[in-house]
Amino acid sequence: MPAGIESILTTTKPLLTGTTTTLELFALVIVISIPLGLGVTFLASGRNKVLRGIILVYVWIMRGTPLMLQLFFFCFGLPFLPVIGKYLVMDRFTAALLAFVFNYAAYFSEIFRGGLLSIDRGQYEAAQVLGFSKWQRTYHIILPQMFKVVLPSVANETITLVKDTALVTAIGVVELLHYAKTTVSRTADISSFIYAALIYLAITTVLTLVFKKLEKKYSF
Amino acid sequence: MLNAIGLEKSFGTQNVLNGVSLSVNEGDVTAIIGPSGSGKSTLLRCLIYLEKIDQGSIIIDERDLVKDGIYAPEREIPLICAKMGMVFQHFNLFPHMNVMDNMITAPMLVKKRSQASCKEQAMQLLNKVGLQDKTEAMPLLLSGGEKQRLAIARALMMEPAILLFDEPTSALDPELTGEVLDTIKSLAAEHMTMLVVTHEMSFAREVAGHIVFMADGEIVEQGPPQTIFTSPTQERTRTFLEKIL
Image (cartoon, rainbow over all chains, first blue to last red):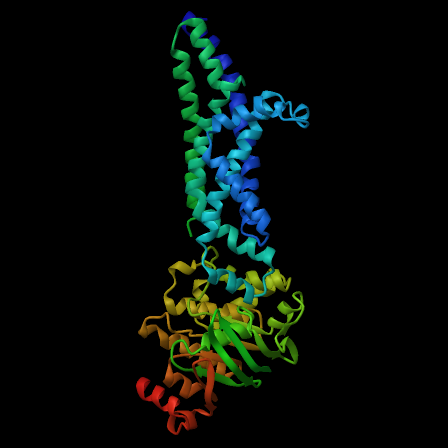
């Protein structure tokens, strides 16, 4: 095997391992935080004032403080809580996952709230006079129209998440950026940074294309 | 068919309905006319439970939707209201569904009917309103008149005993009102029971068997069109008609 190709393989192999972790984190956060965000939106539009208050504070904190601080808090802060702290020692990946889910669910809930507000009252009224139950109305009339409205913002947020996953390198989760950084410092060769950048670009490009397709599908 | 007795409704400190009583018999076409802000639309919306009244009774097909200000249990209300259909000023079609899906979604979900029987009924109704060639079209691509004819057909899919119209032509370009009014006329010819809030005086005169004139949240005068349009007894009716005719 020519030396050049061999060196590329030895540097990219750990990068690919890191990519798996990055993708795993990304996928789990998306799959959990989008439904959770939707749930938060519907709870926040409900009648329970206490619940609405709690959600308001939750979103306020998640949007108003650095994501990095939240990561540190979940990873290093929780175990120091009095009484319950000793039950909150998690491996770093889980801690990172939780922090991201809490943070992104808050952002997604705000996006969905905007989408919900954009739907004309006449849609609710038409569904009601046709006899739809609340659940049928939400599922068949409101949600499909809401998805169309929020799709561009959700796409934006999703692509931001891909890049935000790199933050977990700061709490020692070994993912793509972590491997790139250690390879560069070990070999004194910056090509790993370029490879990592290309991998991030590939992921975000695929996502952009997927969302373009979805937007087309929901253009009524 | 429909009885409303002593309806009272206020938004904040403003009284929109001041003791309105109204009765619609089977096969009647009743037109509600009157100046803007007289409470016509609110009356219609209260009858079909889009607004709640503060006081009074509404009886639909011998069942109490509300009696002396006290509403029927929540789970019974949809059953009582299922006797009524409604056509809105702004159509309120479902923009994410094509014409056929706008027609069949409600009967399939609400009445648990089969898709085949819903589609068959939908084709008959679309034929009737002249939209048989548009089954795949999205609402956005329909003209205003087509939208409202579709909305009427969609309401008929649920086979209501009485159809309420809330200014069905007010959002249309003048040249498109005719086709919608013709659709309503053809329903009148089939003795469909209808309650129509409208600003189209010639239509009211021609199609309705009963005219209700409302002003300031009250029914000022009601009767057959000949009486209301040619010899109204109330000063307010006269003033209104002079302005509008």
